[in-house]
Length: 74
Image (tube, rainbow, N blue to C red; front, side, top):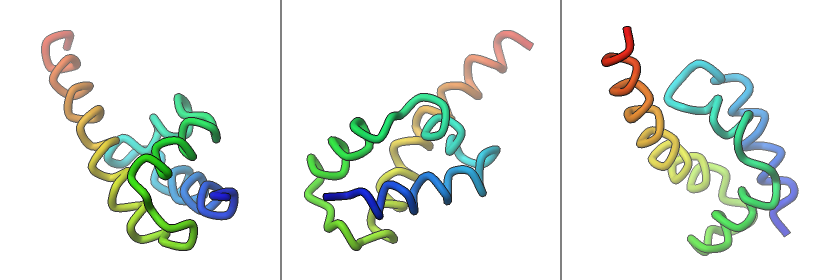
């Protein structure tokens, strides 16, 4: 159902790999998990901007945590 949207999100994630946690989507999320997240938020299969905004929030939280942890390590 979300196949095209998932491809768009992954393409965006690769283009923005080092920004805002998008590397987590590339490295840690499989297609099934992305689809589950999209359907749980009842996002439309053609709503790329809505999906991108949602994942910006989700991945941003993880990225903030990574930054906090790195500040203690380095």
